[in-house]
Length: 638
Image 1 (tube, rainbow, N blue to C red):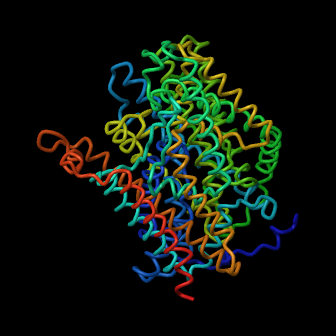
Image 2: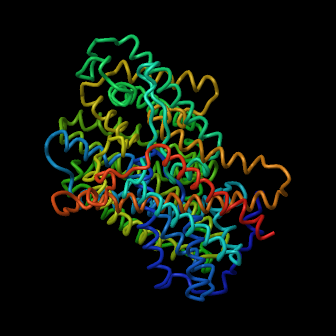
Image 3: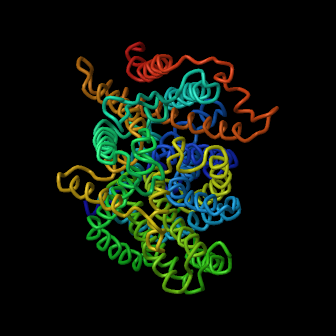
C-alpha cells in the first residue's frame, strides 16, 4: 500500500477545470449548513448524539443541481456537501458544552448568554479547526492514501460518483424530511396524540416504561444499527427497571440529597431527574475518559506521525490544481488574529499566554481528531473524552490563577467549547478533503468552503440554542442535554460545587464494570443517563435495520440498496423533525392572544387527543413509510 498514493488518479484529472466554487454551490451549501446544523443541535440536545450530514447533503445537492438546475458538475456537488456538513460539526461541538452557560445563568437569575457570545465561541472553534487541519492535508490525506481509510469521506465520494442515481436517492431524503416534519407537527405542534407513551408500573414502585414515538429516534436507531441501539436500551433498562425501583425501595420516606421531598412521594421521572441522572452522568464521564485513555497510544503515534509529515510538506509542492492549499502565511496570520481575539474578547477570560495555550491545545486535538477519524470514522472519535480532559485542565488552571466562582466556571466552559468544536470540525474537514482528493477537487477551494460553512453555522447556532432554551430549557424532559449537563457537572465539581458525588462515583463504577465485560461503554452510559423512552424509540429503528440485514429471499445487491435508501430516508427524517422542533420552539415563545401561538394550536386545549393508542397507531404508520421508501420501493420497481 505504500506506493498507492503514487498510482492514484482522481476522478477529475488535475488538468481539467470544472465549475466548483460557484454562487449556486455556496448558497446551497450555506442553506444546508444552517439546516443540518439546526436539526443536529436539536437532535443532540434531545438524544445525546448527532449524525453525519455529508451524504444527505451530497444527495440533496445532486437532486437540486442535476434535476432542478440542469447542471452537471460533480465538483460543484462536492462543494455543497463540504459547506453543508460543516453545520452539523459546529452543532455537534457546541451542544456538548454551550448549554451549560444557559443553565448556570438561569440558576443565577442572570437570563442567558448573548447571541454574540455563543456565535463568537462557535466561530473561533470552527475556524481554528479548519485552519489547523489545512497543513496536515498532505501528511494525512495524500501520503496516507490507502493507509487511512476515512470511511465517511470515502463513502461520500462513492455516493457522488454514483451520481446518475442522484435523483431517486434525493427523493428518499426529501420524502423522509417531509413525512417526519408533518408527523412532528401533528404530534408536538397540534398535539393530536402524545409523542411520549408512558406507564407508571405501580406494582414495581419507582419504575416506569414507555417509548417516545418520534421520527428522529427511529432514524438514529436505524443509522447506528441494532447493536448500538441495544447497548443504549440495556443502559435504560438498568436505570429504569433496576436502579430506580431499588432507590424507591430503600429510600422509603427519607429525604435524600439532592431531592427535597421524601422518596416515597416521587414519581419515576422525579427519581430519574434527582438521582439516576447523576449516576448516568458519572457513567458517561468515566466512559469518555476510558475511551481517551484507550486511544492514548494511538493519539501519541498519530501526533508524532502528523508532525513528521508536516515537516516534509514544503518539499512537495507540485503546482497542480489538485495540490493547492491555502498559503501557510495566510493560515499563520489568521491563527495569530484569532489568538489575539481570544485574549481581548471578554467572553474568554484568559491572558495572552492563556490564549496561546488554547491554540496549542486546539492544534493537538485537531491533529489527533483528523487522524483518528481516518482510522476509526467520525462516529468513534472520542470528542467527549477530549472535552472532559480539556475542561478538567482549563478549570484547574483558571482556579490556580485565582479565577474562581461564576466567572471562572463560564470561562472554563468557553475554553472547553472552543476545543470541542475544534476537534469536531477538524474531523469533518479531513473527511471532506478525503472526498475531494478521490474526486479531484481543488483543496484550496474546499478549505474556503469549509470556512464559509463554519461562519454560516456559527451565526445560526446562537439563535438555535437561544430559541430552544427559551421554549423548553436545557435539562428538561424535552431537552435533556446529556453532554452539556455532564460538562457542567465536571466544572462545578472542580470549582468546589456541592454535587452528590456518591451517585456520580456509582455511575463511574457501573461504567468500569461494563468496560470489563467488553461492552462499549459510551452507548450504554448514554442509555443509563437518558429516559428509557428515548432508548426504546431508538431500538425500534435498530430493529428495522436488523430486519433488513437478516431478511431472506433477497439478493445482496437488493439488500444493500434497501439499507442505503433507508439511511437516506432516516437522515431526512432526522432533519425534518429537527427543523419542525425549532419551528415549534419559535411558536412556544411567540405571543398570540392571551398565550403563545404554540398554545393556540394545541388541540388538547380543546379536549381533542387520540391518547396513547393513537400514538402507537401513528408510530406504526411512520415505520411502514420507512419500509415503503426502502425495502418495498425496490420490490415494486422490480
